[in-house]
Image (cartoon, rainbow, N blue to C red; front, side, top):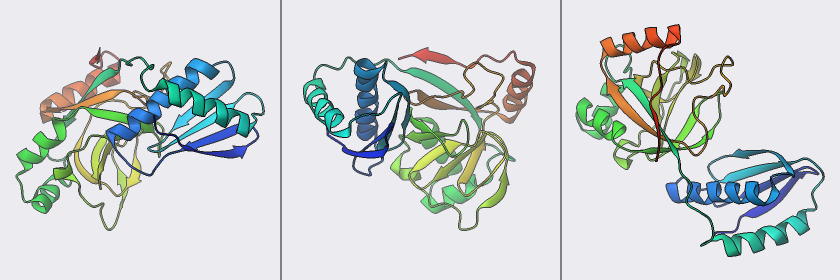
Length: 240
């Protein structure tokens, strides 16, 4: 496994930092390292936070950086073939790619010189990896977007986007979990609740999950919205 740079952010906080690359391979390395940390240091760690190329570790007590670095080097050097394959939860996210929810679908299609139907197909085909949750509570940063859909952010961000708006920003795609300003190209909207303090696990998605977008019609969007509001909708998940 690749070895990261190690920074001491505070007496009880260590930052592991890899090369600044957004990719499935990079996320696999980070998530394997996170598993390794949990396996060997679970009783010493209070929390960990993932990003695209960083892992922050919050210790319960002050940690000696040099001693930790030596132990981590040993673990990473021996872990390449020792780490078991980790199963993932695949979460299906219904998305309506129709008006009035697809604010920028036509613009994205025109930018890539393809049809709107092709945009929807390219966006809903991949299995995405949830790299981490950030920006807003419940906002999933995803890897796996087709290069054919990499689209610049809007020059002027909108001051308000609806909850559930599905957007593309550069090489990334994600879902706005609540009403928020935003500069990503909005190509659809999901009726699901991505963050709620009324749930035991407030965020619908967690780092390491897999995700697939499922195109739905406007009438299906309205029906699912009613079911979500009444608490009867069951999010489709499976272990892969």
